Image 1 (cartoon, rainbow, N blue to C red):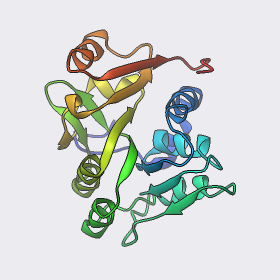
Image 2 (cartoon, one colour):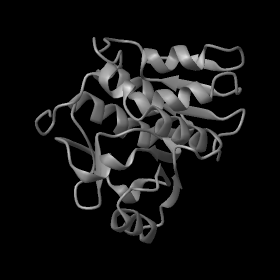
Image 3 (cartoon, rainbow, N blue to C red):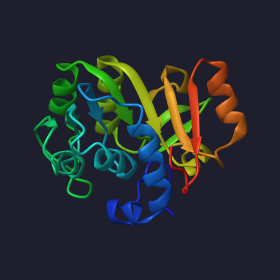
Image 4 (tube, helix red, strand yellow):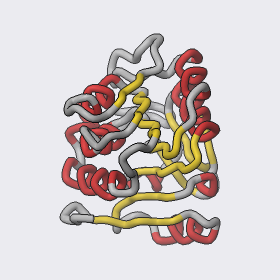
Amino acid sequence: MPHRGADYPFALRQASDIDLKRALARAAAQLISPGESVFIDNGTTALAVAEELAGVGVTAMAVSLHSAAALASKPGNQVVVPGGLIDHDDLAFTSAGAAEAVVAMRFDTAIIGTCAADPDNGLTVAGWGDAHVKRAAFASSQRVILVSTADKFNHTAAHRFAAVADLDTIVTTRDAPTEVLAEAQLAGVRVIEVDEHSDV
């Protein structure tokens, strides 16, 4: 298991919880309408959302080449990438230039992933640059949706980028910690729970 602040290789993450991530992605994609401007985060769960949004008719900035390719796999979307250096493993843009490109746009909705989330420590990730890009997405978006499997609520990572209360919606699995979701709801965050067989 990686130490605090480390991250699993992209291929390992992509191969885990495939059905759950698809169910989460379906639920998140249903919250987005054609014509919206959408930020799509890096990570495997955000990639699953990007796959669901292929051809929907959105303007999307993807901060991962994986998600950009998924969004552009069918005609209909206008897909933008921030440019700059990419990470060799998950093909994500996490440089200062990427954060500047995110700030320069305005999004109706941001689809955010995280390494960890809890009410005390907030939303945290392993990478410093990744945290800056995510902060930029929060600043540039009218609505922020966290899409996360339940395991992300059980630990923390090194770099904090937002509080749970800063979110508008959490889309997660039914086995997510009840106390964490209850605290989020008390803070005004909408919570949507799905399971891997969900059609929502």
